[in-house]
Length: 466
Image (tube, rainbow, N blue to C red; front, side, top):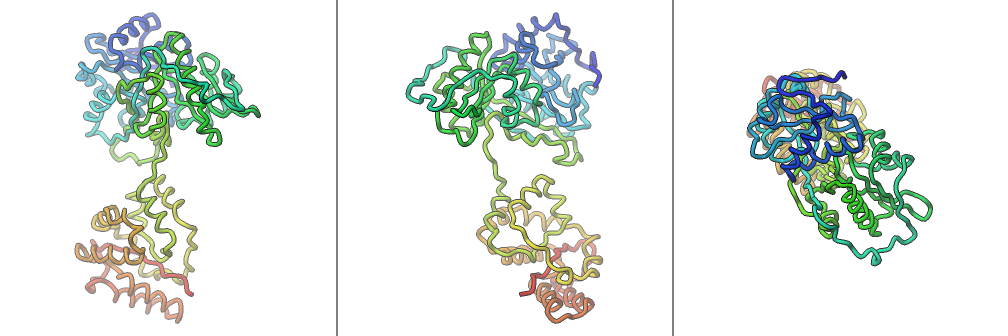
C-alpha cells in the first residue's frame, strides 16, 4: 500500500523531527512509555519500517499515531492497525482521530495495539455509534531503578545453559509466541539480529525457554516449553535481560495479564512496579460479521492464560448424556454464535452419529415450518440465560422439555418434544407413512397452534432405534 503523506488531521513525521517528538514524549512518562520506547527503538535500531504521524496542529493538539500497530495485520494493510498516544490531560484532542477519514477507514475493522486504557476509553466512547469494540487488557510493569538481584545459586541451570539467541532460532521462537498471527517471522529474525535476546538450552541443545527485547522497547515475556517449566529458567532470563536493556539506555517493561500470578511474583521480586493498564482492541463497524477479521490471539497478551467459554465448559460436562435427538435450529445457532465459537462447541461434544434419514422429521414438516420462521427472541433468551449455563445440573432431555415449557408461556411452540419424538419412533419402528407422521407431529403442537408466522420452531430428530 502506498504511503500517504498526510491525512485530514495528521501528517507524516519527517526523520529530522523524530528526536524532538521523542523529547516531548519523555515529559509524559510513564503514560507514554510504549510509544516512547517504540520510537526510541526505531531511531536506534530500525527493526521495522514504522511510520509516525502527528496532528497538523502539533504540539497544540498533541496526538501521535504510528502505523502499522503490528507487523502482521490480518489483511496486510498498512493503515488497518495502529497505536495512538495523547497526553492524559489533553484527551479532548482525540476528536482529531475521531474525525480522521483519510488515514483511518472507520467502515472496516481497525486493530489497536497496546494503547493506554484512558485513551482507549475515550476512543470507545466516540466509536459506540459506529460499531463495537472488543478488547483485552494487560498491566504495564516498569523497572525504573536498580534490578533486585535474585539468588540464582539457589536455582542453578541444571543440565542447561543460557546463551544469546541467533537468527536460526527465530522460527522456534515465532512458533512459541502466543500472538504469532500479529507479528511475522521476519520481525523475529530482525529482533534477534539487532536487540538483546537470551535462550536457555537443554543438555541436548533444544531451546527450552527464551526472552527478547521487542521493537517497542518492552521485553517480551518469556516463553517456556511445557516440559521445561518450574526449573527457574524465567528468573535467569528476566534478570539477565533486564540488566542488559538498562545498559543499552532503554526502560525495561513487561505487559502482564492481571491473572498471571507467576509472572507478577517474578517481576515484583526483580523490582518492577505497575505503571498503568494497556489495551489491545478490535473495532468492528456495525453489521460487520463477527470473527471475519478477528485476531485469534487478541486475548493472548504477552502472558496467555487459557480462557474457557462457560457454555463450552457446560456442554463438555454434559457429554455423558445422549443428546442426539436434540437439534437446535440453524437460525438460532448461526445468529447467536460466531463461527469460531461454533467450532469450540463442536469440539467439546462427542462424535454423535447423524440419525438415519428416515428417523428425521418429515420433509413436509420442515418445508412448512422451518425455512420461514427464525428462532424468536424468547427462544434465544432462554438458551443464553443462566439456566443454560447450568446445563451440567440438568439431564438434556429434561432441560429441552423445560425450555419449551417456558417458551410456551411466552409464545406458541411447534412440536412438543415428547409427542413428536414418540411419533418419530413410530415412523422408525412401525413404518407408518410420512403423511401419518406429519399428522401426529401437527397434533403435538402446543395448545393446538398450527405452524405459522411468529411461531417458534424447534426441529427434533428422533433417536436411533434400539
